[in-house]
Every structure is written in structure tokens, then in C-alpha cells.
Amino acid sequence: MGLLRKSRTTDSLPAAKSAELLIPLVPPKAALLSGSGDGQIEPSDPDTSELVPMAEQIERDLNAIRKAVRRPFESEVAAGDLTTPQRGVMQILVRNHGITLKELTSQIGLAHSTVSGIVDRLEKKGMLERRSDVRDGRLARLYPTVAVTRFIRDRMPALTQGPLIEALRKATEDERLEIRQALLRLRELLESRSD
Image: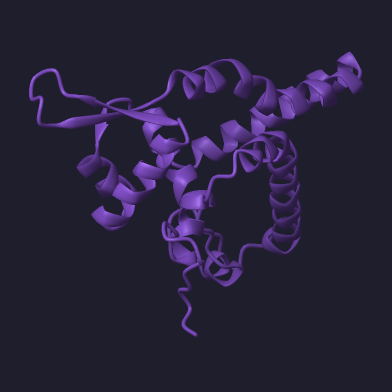
């Protein structure tokens, strides 16, 4: 069995491609320490021995926070019984209303026949619709349905912000301010790296 393995569904992605849609690529720790690349640290840096464990812990904490915040949304999506490629298609459609099948195929990086099958199944589930292009009736454009658009507009903010709101309710006003200031400062430091 090779490194790239397809699941049993006909509209599945290779595992590596599927992961690309969902998680960012992270260089290994050795690459960070080698100093090869933008903003990399040098092993000879006197602060490295103290900062690397701290950076690793912050990364773990941020990943845990991201996971906790996304849990209700992921549960809701899982209840919709969508495969990973179907979710990828829907994410692209939501961001690009009126995209053509050819454009969608290019963006998701799968074979045209695979994407066409995914679109057919999503259309049967009532999640997207095809409409003729107003200028060229031979061309079909893809749109998320009203129900999907309404879910994204009305339900998704509650799912994604709800865990944060609940956590902030438990914090004191001073703790909320400290959290906000610390995150803002970390963001400023990270964004200033590229200047």
C-alpha cells in the first residue's frame, strides 16, 4: 500500500490531498532550528533553548483552542453526512457563488469527472443548484442553495463563536481583558515578522 490511499467512496481524495484542504502544512522542528527560511531561528541563538519549548506549548494550546472552537461546527457538518471532498467543494462554492464546474475542478485539484460526480451528489442532497449563465446559456454556474446560505449566515456564527462566548462568560472582566491583550500582542508580533 502506498502513501496515498483512497477511501471507499467514489468521490474521495488521496489522504494527502484531503489533509491539505483541512490543515496547514507545518515544517518539522528540525527545519525551524536549521535557520533555513523566512523568520527561522538559529540554534546558536541564546534564547532558543528557552523559546522553543514555550513556542511548542503555545502551538499546542492554540491547536487545542482551535479544536475546541471548531468542535460544534464539525459536529454539525458531520451530521450532514458529507465526505471530505464534498465539504471541500461546498467550502469553495460558499466563497465563490456562481463558479463553473471547470473553475471548481481547477480550485479543488481533482479530476473533472470526480468533481462532476461530487456536484451531482450534492445537488441530489439539495445543497447546491446549477443555473444557466445569463450571458451564455450553455454554461452552468453552481450556487449553494438557500438552506446552505442561511445555515452559513445564521447558524454558523453561533456554532463557531458559541464556545468562545461561553468561555468568556466564565472569565472575569479582568481575565477577558488580559486574554484579549495577550492575543492582540501575539498577533502583532507574528505579523511584524514579515515587515
